[in-house]
Structure formats: structure tokens, C-alpha cells
Length: 269
Length: 347
Image 1: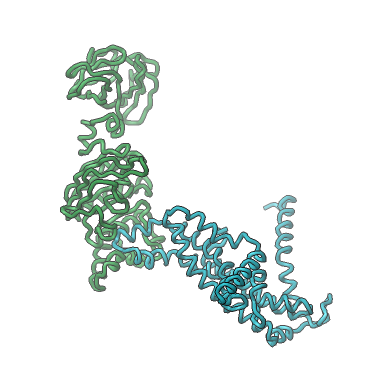
Image 2 (image 1 turned 180 degrees about the vertical axis):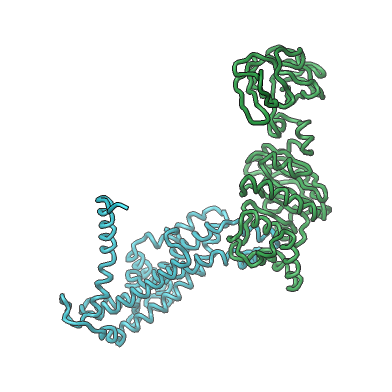
């Protein structure tokens, strides 16, 4: 065994530097959330967990957190209800225009979220003027917008698992006497279940962390957590915000790790 | 049990015929091979028997039952797929019971049948394994047990041995043939490997460009091929270009007059003989020989193959038992001789 060559050493340093660049801000936030001073200062004079207690006592954060959870779960379920049948149709039935449908369903991923958010808001208002049916600033309106955020992720992940689960298993089921419904529930669904779980996790993350699309759509006293964080940041900067962010990082990180156990994420992107 | 009858079935994609007017009578209990190069329509034909592809015209019958418009799951076929297509999320036993469960058999009957089937293919000790934990040969046995569990009318096998290595392939085909005979089930298998088809099929249907070129036993196809395609596809064959001038009389392009057995309407044709039915001599007799130059000598152990070229430019092949002394060498000018009874003519 020889020592590290110079080239290899340089390569390793670069890898470490890139990781540090990605992870350092996150670690800093976690670190800051334990500082004891109210005004951020380096180095800290002491450490405390009181910011976590304070954050959970603040109604805006607590309500925002609950709201984000509720919207996230509803949007995830809705995106599965739309995305799984859509993915099946696109991958299993060669009808004309399926590529167009795929691109339309994926498009929320390409349109800048702030533009899409404004568009959805204007659409809701116009709809209300026409029908007096209110969606802007309601829970349903928010769920609809977040379903748009989540849908491309669901479609992508479910399509990917349908492609890797080749149709021959389904043909085998048909040849053994299974009708279309039995084939779907006994063969297709179990095979794509890991993809669906990953899709649900990703949809939830996308919804839970969305800021821009929600900005125009939340009603007074009904904000989501990212908006509650933004509102708070406008007036104050203390470790409370770091504590809230740390909780958010933990939730998203857990969802990512769970997804990766079901579908190797590297295979999808 | 029943035979399978295909009446003038045709499948076109756009204007392109994938299967062109194929009629076929598969006898009760017979193992029939559909043989041909890729794209010849053999797989489409199999999929029309299975019900995955609807024929553009023509009918498919299982015995007296017309199944042409019946969807796959109502046909009662058993199918072994290329790569087996075992359900990856189910155990071996659950794979075998799948067809019985979706057909609503009651539980004790299912359990008994699954054990019976696994015993039949000698896989009962692996019942609780996942398909992923099985070797290729074992997966194939499970696929066969699964396909046969519901007493299908017809067993269909799509390139069943292509995923196995050469040695296992020979072993598995003998095994499958044995199991098929025991069950006495009418079977169709698709392959592009002529040796495989000849080894286990009762009859072989040779397909090319969507048409059934010839149907017969391995011996029929080898000894009496009806077309140049069949002659060249089943075993090796020599072709001397020319035309038929009268009964049993053939004029080669170089002008030499040759003789053959069998009938031919006349006109442009090729005279054929098999490499092992010919010998190399110093000078041949007119009517059943051709002067050639040795181009290459390939020693294959028990036999040696001689690549030859005639004056007219026909490439010929002779295989002979390897002998030591005095064997022909590259560049030798010799004569290929064959018996008139071994020479036949194709278009």
C-alpha cells in the first residue's frame, strides 16, 4: 500500500469542500438554534433549548406547522389519486397525445413557482367573480395549489417504477386468468408500491416546504409554516427562527431517508 | 385437451403484414415449434393463439371452441414467457397458486394442486422462496408449474430457453419435453434455434416474412425442404445457381448439365445438396459433380469443413471425416461429387 498520491488528495479535498459547502448552512442553523443570546453573535456566550419551547408556544408557528401538515397530507393524497392513474395510462396505453399529457402534468415543475402562484390566484379570483365560489384564501384553494406542486413528483416516480416493472408480469397475470382489475390489484399495484411510497414522501416534502405558490393563496390566520417563518423574519431575527427551521429540516430529512429506502432516488433523476 | 386450429390468420400493422395468411393444425397433445429468424412473425402468431394480439382476419380455434374474439384471461391457456415473468413480490407457491386464486378455486383444492404441481417439477422444497433466490432453471420449472396449474387447453412457450446458458439449455429442453409428454398437453413453442426445434418438437413450422414456409417433422424439413429459405435455415446447404431444363435435368450457370431427384416446374432455380452428402475427389463424373478450388480448411475435430468456390463463383461447403494423410489443402483444384439421390432443386 502506497501513500495517497497528490491527485487523489486533491480530489478528496474537493469532495470534502463540496460537501461542506452543501451541509455547512444547515449545520449552522442547527447550531444557532441553541445559542443563548437573543441577538445573534459569534462566538455564543452559552447554549439553551428555550428557543424550541418559545417556538412551540408561538401561535403563528404552531398553527402554521399544523396547517402545513394538513395541507401536505391532503395534497399528497390528491396527487396520488390523480398521478397514479395518469402514470398508468401514460405508460401502459399507447394513445395519441400521451406525451403532451405527460408534459402538461410535469409542467408545474418548470414554471417558476411565484408565477404559477400568481396565476392560480388570478384564476381563483376570476372564478369567484363568475361563480361567487370562493377558493382564494381557503383551505381547499391551498390544497389545490399544493396538489399542483406535488403532482409532477408523483407522476415522475410512479412512471419510473412502471417502466422498471415491465409489462410481462401483467401479461403473465392475464394468461393465468386474471381480468384487468385483478391484474392491477394483485400484480401492478404491489410491484409499484415502493414507487408510490416514495412518490407520497416527495409530494409531501414538496408541499411542506413550498413558499412561493402559497404566498398569494393563504388567508389571514391560515398561513403555512414557511409563510409564518417569512412573516416572522420581516420583523425579527433571533434563534427562534433557527429552532423552527431545525424542526423543518428534521421532518424533511426523515421523509427523504424513508423514500430512499423504498426507491433508490438516484435511479429516478 | 384439444388441438389448436389457425384458419388463414393475418395480422397487419398499418399496411405491413406481421403474419400473412397462416393456417395451421396443431394436433392434440403435440409439441409444435414455430421456427424462424427474428421478425418472421412467429411470436405474433403465438401471441394470437394466447389472445394478446387480435388477428386482423382469420380464426383461432381450441378444439371446436372458436376463441378468436375471446380475451386472454378467458381462453384458458398456460404460457411460459421469455425470462419467465414470475411475480417478484410473491413466493414460489403463491406464484403457482395465482391462476387458481383469481379463478376462485376453494382453498383446500388450491393447496393440494400447488403441492402437486411443485412436486411435478421437483420444486416442493423451494415453495416459500422468493423467485429472486432461484436459478434460471428453477425459475423455468416454477413458470411451467404456474402455467400448467389450471389444466390449460394449450401450453405456449415463448423462447423458453433463451435466458439459460448453453449446457443448462440442453438439459432443460429435455426436461420440459418430458414433462410436456407426461401431461399430454397440446403445446406450441417459439424459437429461432433450429437445433432446439429439431431436438424436441414433434413437428416444426418454419416461418419467414410472416408466412408459414413449411410444416413438417425435422426429417421432412431436412430431407425435403420446399424452399431455398427452409433449405438454408434447417442445417447447412449448398446452392448451385442455374435453371431446370427438363425432368431431373438442371443446367448450371457455367453450362454444366446436372441431375437431381424430385419434381420441379422448370425455370430459374438452385440445385442443392448437404455438405455431409458430398465428397472431394480428383475428378468427378459428369452429371453429379462440379470442379472447385479449395478456399479454406477448417478442422473441427471429428469432421473437417472445406470451403470451396466453383468456376461460376458458387460458394460450396463440404464436410468430411477428418483423415490424416492426403487430406485436401488450401488451393487444391478438385471436384465435388454427390449422389444424384441427394440432390434436390428449390426456387
